[in-house]
Image (tube, one colour):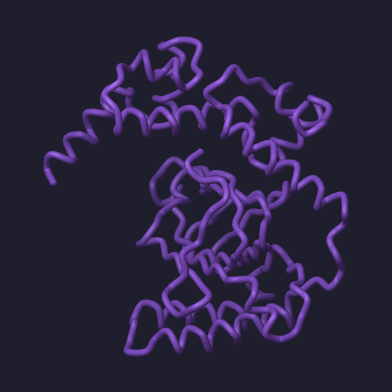
Amino acid sequence: MEIWKEEVKYIEDTPIRIILDDEISVLRGKLPPHWHNEIEIDLVLQGSVYYIVNGANYHVAKDEIIIIDSSVIHSGRCSDGSTVEETHAEVMTVQINKDVFRYANYKIPSFQVFLSKQHNTKLRSIMAQIKDIYEKKAEYYELLLNSEVLRLCYCLLTNHSIRDEKPEGAKHTTREMKQAIQYVEDHCSEKLNLGDVASFIHYNPSYFSRRFHQFTGFTFNEYLNRCRIDAASKMLLETEKTISEIAFECGFPSVSSFITFFKRQHQVTPEKYRKGFSHEKVKK
């Protein structure tokens, strides 16, 4: 995949990043499994989204919120449907530097993951205010954002925190899944199978297969092939290597299997993908 550990870039002079659907529409299709150090709050503005957070499934509809703790594996996809309207979701995302919570001399807590509309009124109101400030970008708007971030953190701590520590077993599983996926990304161009990765993190293969799918939303082979296709996509645009050369260098057993998986992910052949982007560069 292109990103595993996401490096979040904050708005200048603030401890947050704000993502609105008109800026980045990662939820059209699948948002690949990833993690980051920041605490993330996602408010669904339109449509609905299926999330997997630390192996648990959530269906988040309009005006509902999902909270993702620091370093937690998560992924998402839009709802199934036959029209663009049915499969499109608009989501507001706020990612917060977890160190903000230290201002209150408070040990960084865990949070409730899913908040229904009737239980997130205060938090949703603050999110709306943050969205308004961010979109208007008036002079010194960063100061206003910082004040709203503190309100948001206070609301999280007083209304949605879970004081209990996470079970030690859950921490280990999360860490091991991260190690496994990083291993897949680092070695995806090699002859790699589920047993190799399970052995790397000292898991039984069948147990690893179940946990991998639970945490990522992908089967092992689906994830492996997506990693390979992402690497191949980059090579198509940045090198002049032939389709055959790229297929074998990225770990595919044959050119035909490479083309099949590539079309499944990008809806075009590798050749058309390369020509299409080359045409866009020429136009610019």
